[in-house]
Amino acid sequence: MEKVIFKRAALSAAVVAALVAPGMALAAQDMMSPEYGKSYEAFADDAKLSGGLFYFQRERDRKNDEGKYQSNLSHSTAQLALNFNSGYAWDMVGLDLGGYGAYDLAVDQTNGANEENEFSFWGSSWGTSDGLPENGVSLTNAALKFKFGDSVTAKGGYTQLYVPGIIGVNWSYQPGTYRGGQIEGNFGGLYLTYAIADEYKAPWFKETQSFSRSKSKPWVSAYSPLEDQYNIDYIHGIAARYTFENGTAVTGSFGQSKDYMDSYHFKLAHKFDVLGGLSTSYQFYGSETSDFVATAGDAGTTYDGLAWQQALTAAWNYAQYGFRLEGLWTKAEGDEGNYLPRLTRGYGNSQGANEIWWDSRSDWNANNEKALFFGVTRSLDDLVGAPGWSVGVSGAYGWDIEDGYGKKHASGEDTEWAANFDVSYTVQDGKLKGTLFKLHYTDYNNDLPTSWAYPNVFASEQDVKLFMIMPFTIM
Image: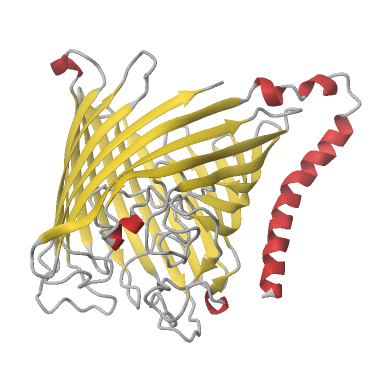
């Protein structure tokens, strides 16, 4: 255990040293100049204190094994967030601080699923739980940030990391938080970045936790996912993107969780000057894992060979309408049976940066599954006589689902589909300008006789979500 603690402390120290040392050297060279004494004032003069008030209400019913719908999630939750973002003292170093509080206004505590409502807290950290949702506060940001000239920035501490296609954060209304650092550079059309972290917390946890090769739940398993046998010392990722003058952008990324998973990402995007602006992309996400020996059932090979997801996307606008058409194809052979959009196994233990999200309940990522999504939104400004209103309808359909060993369920059922409806309003002026109200409904269906008949494919659901987001700026 002392060795593990030393490794993590050394990693954190290395990140901070790598980010801070160059800035200290530059400051030392310049500290005798006449401008030096005043330039620190930008730290306060350019600072911003902002936040938001949030409300989320959800009623989700899931079909049980008898074919009847019963409550799966039922809660209403409020959040208050505050964020301080300083300017750069000496045009070089600054500070970001942020946090939030969450409180369940109403929750059905007789149903254990409400512990995972993702907007209040599911225990203090990943892998720990007392079986009930919790109120409380949590830190999202406590990081130093740096500028090195006009092209390079860096940050380190408790912060959000983003490596295209590889490392991202979970969101409720608030972002997840890594203990780590990142450096980014913009050189004309070329963007480069590298990030590394040794701990993470999703926004429904209060404290960061180490990474794990396990996804077992300690309240149903004899083995904790936090045991040393599952430990991953760190995750890291690197990416490059080049944007050509004609708007074509090419992105390549590589990520790794130490001694466990290697992940790859490629994206080709282009915007055509047709149909009011047609944005298109091809995206590839791939991962392969190493065998590992452990005493619990999570030992073995997560994937058999290279697992991947490929996506084609198109989005365009016409008058008051917006359109999206997207397709997915997944291959995830092996024990997992579905493609993980992250470098670790357990949900909320880390997060990837997969751009495909249809807000249609399923992840549409089962082995061999093909899936399509189509959505239309319409601004109602011309119909209601006031700006800010919009509606949307969308649907998704997936087929050819298999488990990780190429087998279909005994019932022969291998499809899933969902229909969605959205209505939203954004306040356009006054003291509440920018406040968003949104209602989302999903009717998700499959004909499987039991939940989880395939990995990560649950039973049919009806889901109603009501959002309210009220941003504000104090200074």
